[in-house]
Amino acid sequence: MKKNKLTFWAFVGPCLLAFIIVVIIPLIFGVYYSFTDWNGINADLTYVGISNYLELFSDKHFVNSFIFTTKFTIVSVILINVTGFSLALLVTRGLKMSNLLRTIFFMPNLIGGLILGFIWQFIFINAFASLGEYTGQMWLMGWLSTTKTSFWGLLILMTWQLSGYVMVIYIAAIQGIPKELLEAAQIDGANTWQRVKSIMLPLVRPAFTISLFLTLSNSFKLYDQNLSLTGGAPARSSEMLAMNIYNTAFSFMKFGEAQAKAVIFLIIVGIFTLSQVYISKKGEVEM
Image (tube, rainbow, N blue to C red):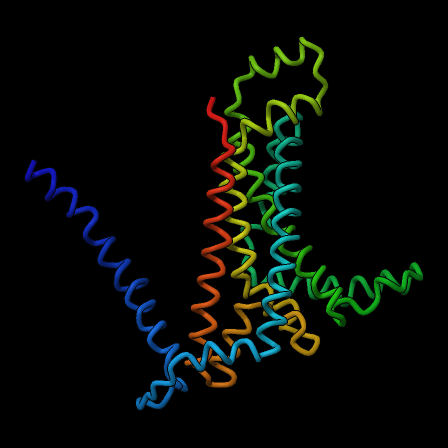
């Protein structure tokens, strides 16, 4: 028994120590700084109570960022999972090009967010404008110059990048469904939509739990794509929460206020993701 405990702590101890140093201690310091007026340079800190938290409600840029991020997260989670699940259905139909299609659909996930942002910035600004001039479609002109087009630009980028990733999760879940079930339903006269609705969707629900959690948390924390595609423009209207916190700390040197925003951000992401996991797991079906 004693030898087993030593082996357990030999494996778990280093990971636990690293977790405490990298996550727990910075979190505690972050919460502490949120109650001070620290500017990131001065070593003398003044305790200001909850004034940093109260100022958040009067910060219109933070409120706008919160609304923009929430809207973006809701739409992107739906788009990414619907697209990823549709792609998984397509490549599990036994097509000759299935392996090639899987590779093509997954490739955007291998490219870094900053590079993707600059690629899509060129497409939206230059390629769309040229196409609009050639076809006379004025709605293709001036992309990323308004809040609406910036919002949809970010959604297109995020969906293009992450759909292939969640597709892999859905493929694993679909391939785990016993073929006998699908064949029996087909013999009984169920069409494709009925087999997807009554057999596949309930049985791949654990995959939905994982994919929804990943896309929900990634959409809330989005920063690099936001930085490279819009930079928060126009007039900070497409600035998401992560970028708002970064700008507060490193552009305006208000580290105490930025820490307060980060704490609120952590609580919001935690509430959304934990609620989603709890609700999703309640409806899971075991084979």
